Image: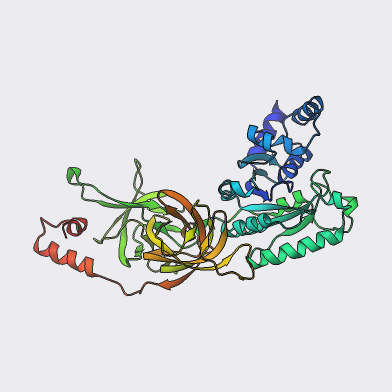
Length: 462
């Protein structure tokens, strides 16, 4: 019992990593995951033998994918519909593997599953080669900012482990991923069904001298915390207290990067209003001196200023990579039943900001890499690079500077129809500070101190 307890303790202290496994339907994702579970002894005792015995009784050929495809619809259709979460461990760490669907109709599920991952394994069938969905999934990984990518070229056993076929597929797909600024950590030739190059190198592919799939997984790193980045907090709401002579105005939100302390000089974007932090407060707990990334907090300020929900608070004296923009270039995946079209207003949501947005230009569409066709829309499940114009200025970042402030969704009639990442800000609002509201407040408060004690009250009455 003592050894068992010690083993559980060691297991619980291991680092955990989320990895998504994706690829076109029938390219062997579930088989690869099933083989990983079997070859690392991660299955419950008797599970493998039980599935094999059930197959034998029912006259079915055993496949390692049967260890995962548990949903009734999946068993009937032979495809993965939902994003299953599978747990296993190596000597280095614990893994949560997200087995994402490869079929185009379940792209939304794949996108949801991949958003929780810090690394990806992309599986390509050596027989079929680079499919359209292989490219689409590569773009999705780029959209989500997943930079740690392993490409597995599977089913080489059927092709007698031909090195030339492997090299041809590798060169083609590597060129495509490079165009998306995705640089795979490795390309590995494999046979998931036969267990080749999964946890041990295969003698049948002696021409390959790289790492096994498990070794590459163990070489991945969890992403660094945003705590060391610039301070940024989307403003979620403003609370005003009035009971028991409590006249605080509380600016609340969740810090997405960096840290802040009382006394710091802060700026709100896009309004450019500035103030000093008076106090940092949390619900049902004593006030704090400091707050950091992922903390939901409220701030009171020494100066009276009027700002709106959706603005982003940064440190005024810090070089934060936050821009005020009316136009952005973005990578976008469209999931709406109706196409994304020009001259139509969509609700653009980024952080706590909500403004209208219009499609201004389609620069590139997946599947038309040579831009041979002038596109007037993006249809369901299509991906592309676009330019969006915003109805009002929004404080945002490039996705690569701050993932939270660089990831957005588009909404049409209360339905989330698209999502993407900000590649760059094309136009910025003038940096000239507009003090009209502050000056108006100061003037009215001076002459009517009892009637206009609150800046919000002034603006509402105006």
